[in-house]
Length: 237
Length: 181
Image 1: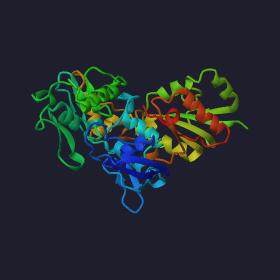
Image 2: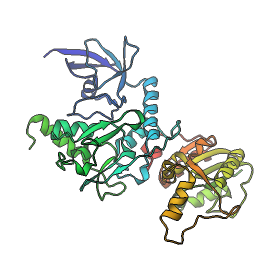
Image 3: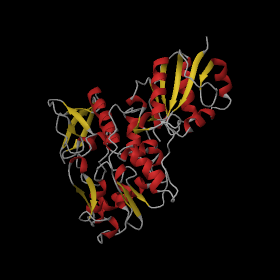
Image 4: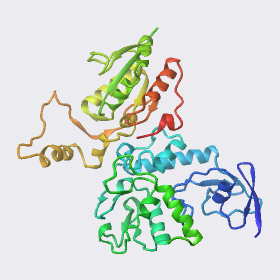
């Protein structure tokens, strides 16, 4: 296996060729914020939180889909990147209806955690307050579009791990939303196995167990991490 | 000279003020350091005074009264603190913003969801009119310090007040100080 040597934030890092910049950083103990990324699912670079600067290029690159290269010089936390990340989080908060106080994921939400991480004590952008719906047609789970950030983790975990492919992304622009089946009520989609992996993969309170109240969605991340590790190792049931 | 402190209640549930009361015995120390010049829980003053050093403003701007008061507050206050999630994000009161306009919300609440005796509240000059949307305070007037939380824990409120009492601007960062919800 050939190895690349690079520097990330001034730290010398050795990583196997084919490794992504994000993986190399993680192996070196350098934290690059992510939201759409979930180890074990295919990377899609949807959220752009993991953007990094690579010497020699003016364009910012998403670390989750950028391969390491010999001699690469990566910066992951410049003032420019920090400013972009805060703006990205503010955009996510203002384009949806994220009311942390009444959310099932309050206290266990990756978006909420990232707001703290980027130093967001308020948004500098106007809130849009879109009209969005809630799908409670499934007998065990619910989908609240108000809290969805379109990371597509649910889409990928259902397709790549469960193999059911219940979820897809429908429409475009501000109308873009997660759809079950061919834009059916979730409960009407026969392909759904009720496995709940999509709920576990959701970084916010968009997908939740029916009956959960504010702050009651938790322990999902480690459960899914166990499943994804087993899936990669070929030992999943 | 004592710091002149105000606390203001706009469109919120008073939870931030309840959390303020959770400062417990520190309130006695605070009382020795500040003069409370306007507050729904600590004074009976009806008119917002001039020359206020610090104002904690709870709630979003959701009514015509809120709008008039927040403009007065800004005009007469040195340090305006957006106090809690409703002031900063419009939070739960802002849930009505997804519906088109105040009339829709009033009709839903007072007519559609009522029994046959429902009627819209009408008392011009007494009941303030709803604005079309509940706005965060910073959408209406400049804010100096943001104190998030629903409600902000008492320790967070104390940290902000202690900094202001020292004449410093609080540095708001980390989960202890800026977590929403």
